Length: 238
Image 1: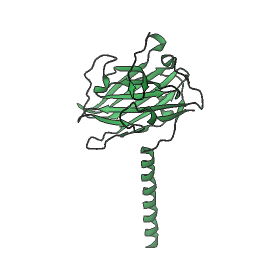
Image 2: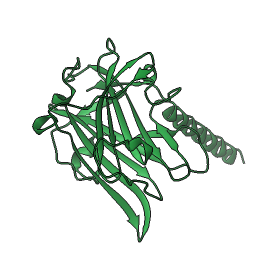
Image 3: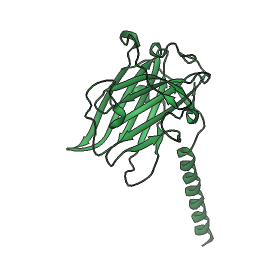
Image 4: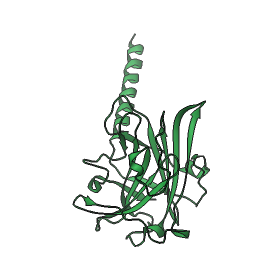
């Protein structure tokens, strides 16, 4: 009998510790270590072997409810730029905009915000839709007053690379995957670019879905909107 009680107690302790670990992971605002990689080709599937060298990070739903899809992302950096991978559980793709630089945030989208230098209130925002249309902009933000600026001479080594895919079981959508690469040349003249080992950037990662109204997922929770840069998390480059 005593052995059963001990086993039960150990099991309860194990579950308690793991549950607390999940809660800590969900609400964790500790720095995220960004591992270094060789440059690689994006496929839109996330199956490239380079992604195996880092772990997924969970995006948490801002307002939990009936629509509680799982969302996660990965990030790597190389000598030439930043790589991001998102996997978003979904049952319906809302993506009718068919041009780059459109208001993609009004439909299904994943987003990344990079703020390399805290001495300046200017950061880079990148959005990618399930149908592989992008919105790369530089955002000056002065006490909540902000507006995005499109890149000039957006060509050759200054252009991003991106790819997406939609996973289905029969005709039913299961999820969608997005990969993108942001070259450091596009981020000029922001300071602290390119990053070196031990350098810190502020950043945040998001997803928006429109299956049942608008639903939001974030890495680090913000207050009013995604442009709440004071609440961005911290990246540390390996």
